Image 1 (tube, one colour):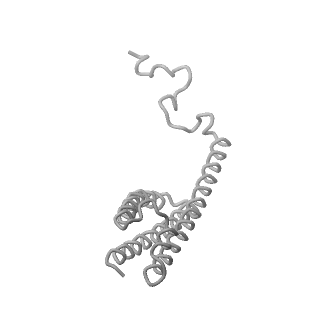
Image 2 (cartoon, one colour):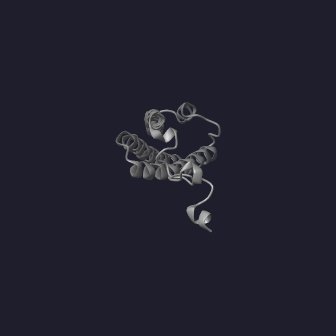
Image 3 (cartoon, one colour):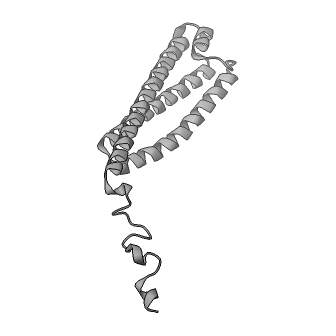
Length: 160
């Protein structure tokens, strides 16, 4: 196996490990939504933003490495076919399969989290519509607590 292939395989292993971390965090985000744990959810969303940037960097490097190896615009199947059998081809097939599976699982976990977030929003909307929040009662604002006949001036202004 050439150093180029060895470096590429090592890089793909790191990329795969990063995807495992993303999947774990997607599961934790979904659980935070299930538990209505806002603080944990906020932390997970911040982490997710950082992870998204990291994955973009990984993807950029993967494409650059593939181009350097002569596989510009090639998909996983094309690379595996070009490399052929033996250790590099088998290892690449294994890594690409794992990464593909992880991507599907991440997408599924994200869809579950979005579905749960939408359910929570619908529930909150129902609660707000069925309560006094809709009429403005019990809501702090500039006009709250003033009777209608004194709504434009205070008692102090009236005495002066």
